[in-house]
Image (cartoon, rainbow, N blue to C red; front, top):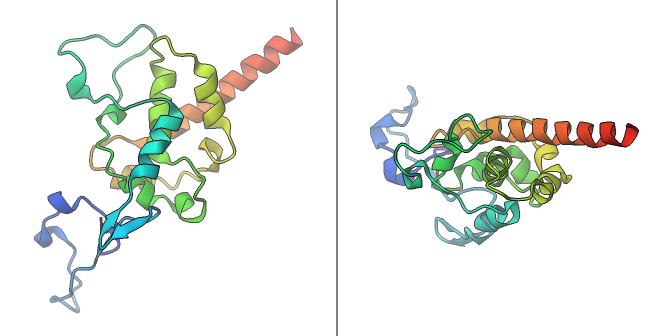
Length: 182
């Protein structure tokens, strides 16, 4: 939800943790539904579009808790990324200034999931993921406001994952151009 204009988990937000305005100590608390998603009723939003973005990226999320204890990251991957801990709350999409003005933007959570595929392909073909990420309403649409990472309750750092994905796309383009010239 949005509490006093800021994305927060309603189940985890303590009233006494909300900043009080010195001039008005008895200020009412304003609670709103998430932005950039279709409202269903009262404060509820339809999360179907949010989850469809993950499917477009080709990845259901896997959390660190689902990884076997003591398991090693696959070859070519330094460590398991924190974005695996995404709780699919939609706060990042709600806070995203690009999603406010462009409903076709795939969004930070789905792009973090796409970055995970690129970092840990597990036999998947990377071409479709990189093509999706390179589309006009994908990684290049982001203006790096970092609001998605600021509001993430699980320290997923979707903005960092998105910027890493940009690097992979640029490197992939450079490899293709270089191979054509050879």
